Amino acid sequence: SSHFGPQGGRGGCWYEPSDLRCHVCVRLAANVQGVMFFLSPVLLRNKSKRLAVQLVSSAQTGFAYWTEKSPLKREFRMALRKHDPIVNRHVMFYETALVRGVRRISRPRPTIWARWTGNGIQDLVKKVQKKYEKKGHF
Image 1 (cartoon, helix red, strand yellow):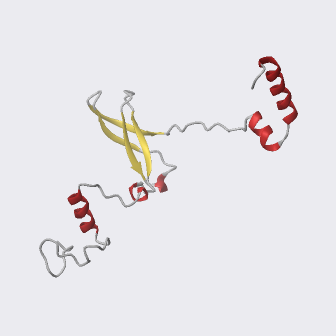
Image 2 (cartoon, helix red, strand yellow):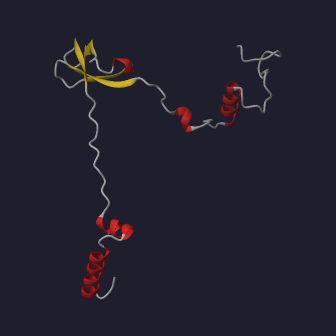
Image 3 (tube, one colour):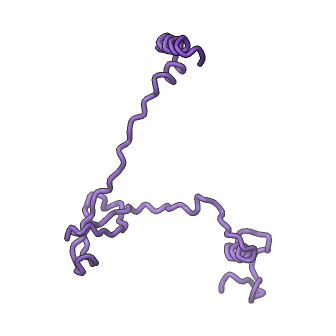
């Protein structure tokens, strides 16, 4: 393999054994120690710009495939002829819109907002005072 240096054979790397530039040596060292060697979670993340799309069967069986498509073709709907195992035939599969969760607008809670800004603090004080008079403790 091209990884090995002028010594050739096993262990003949171009870099020093302590140098972590050689990914093969690092992997070998990790395997020898019995430890998986991950440099960073960033390296494990998917950096692809391609869009994940779901293709649903036109036979209305509910069977679906997942695939990717180019971001340049975002406005065009993908259609492929693929096998639907439920009806055991090749049918057309069409891209469906991905259902995204509806984001709620988070509004500050009145109590926290009153403490933070001081607006409506008198109402809060009266409410707490009533509870204290009723229970006798906080």
